[in-house]
Image (cartoon, rainbow, N blue to C red; front, side):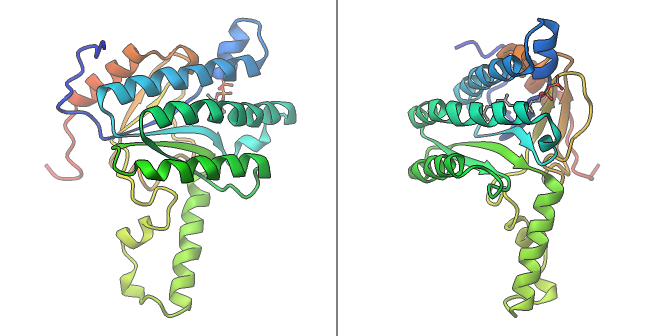
Length: 242
Ligand code: FPP
């Protein structure tokens, strides 16, 4: 395995990636946008292999945001068909690696067929809780939506007399986010030249290190991911201290 000079003793525990630039990748080649998403899905596999091989424990990928419904219907349909097809494929890959798979986001608006597949994958992967690798797909995920969901749940607890106002703290609140139980991301990567967070893990990224690259997601290689980790390893994380 080529680790591209990453210091394996100082790895980020959790890497989050905004898989951006599929559409532009396709456009540059005169292909339909969906061809870019197919290529992006292939890259997801390559990057997942690499992360697993070097020992990253948690990987979270932004596949579809609560705002992505604004895209043309045929692109949305193609994306969900792709998710369905690829999830079957990833299921085997994740099984080989004994990974826990989680889907972050609101499943309600998704088709029943896809929801069932997602639930089946999540449930079957629970046997790997001790396996040490967790793979999260953010599908129909939006951080503001997630924070509101948590707020409603916490309000409900208070209303039912299960908690006092003083019990509301970061830990309790975090337990109502889709990411409950996961460590916050240490490193957030966004390829494709855009430098924004786009409603992804707003609460969780309070002290996350950001890394941007101009390369479009389908071309974002394991070597480039290694470069991102090496850059992360040089940073001095102070968490508000000195
Ligand atoms: C953003 O690129 C990418 C997406 C909205 C979709 C990402 C999805 C995949 C890579 C497939 C994942 C597969 C599974 C199974 C989860 P963009 O379309 O915004 O690109 P652009 O900014 O160049 O238009």
